[in-house]
Image: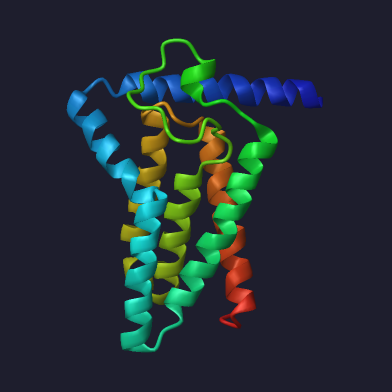
Length: 179
């Protein structure tokens, strides 16, 4: 496949999945749930996760606070730099009939900062508490999914946001000498 066909395929399917999830939910209670869950991936909540991780670090001699702070910091710098470089408008701007309620503070969607944050938290906590990994990743996935359901992101925004978190987490583990 040539590059233009691949790009067209991705864009078409990105829009299809977005519209299916955004309009397919249909239930006001699920939409409200997604509005509440989405905030678990924002910057102010990330500060709370870091404080919790630092308290765990102090009480249990684990390096989780340093790992989380480093991973989130690097991932968010990359995410917000990419947003300004790529300048991909949010779906409710580019797509017709996308359901959304409130405009986010940043007008660009690629990549998803909420996804990068949620996945970074899941990775850091799962590294130290692997028995709870399914819970951490389920919540992070739900936070990511909420971004598409609410019309703020395309699915590829989520994929790249998650990929950034995995790379930053791994780099942080290496830097801190944890692997």
